[in-house]
Length: 142
Image (cartoon, rainbow, N blue to C red):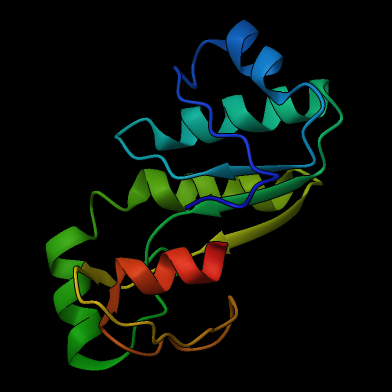
């Protein structure tokens, strides 16, 4: 169940006119996107938010975008998804430079476990953990 004051909109994030229309009157934008063009998608969201004077953004990216995952797990993670993370990092850079109030979530590898258990780390702290349940991420966001 979603909070009663939420509005779920599904559409093409690269359709700027539709995106601007969807953002009219919104207080917060939550984006959970993916793809090789994630940085372009992020810039589209940022532009529409600025056009509509929406100031607060919650954007889900991934662990490893700041090369913050320590040890053997960090080495493995970088070997497995390092290259695909490049647009994620460019998206983070765009968000950080946007002037918006933002939260970037960097979940670890996702599981379907029925548990809520997570740790928070800031941008400049070593990443903690290796997995997190989708249920935990949802609990944090809502």
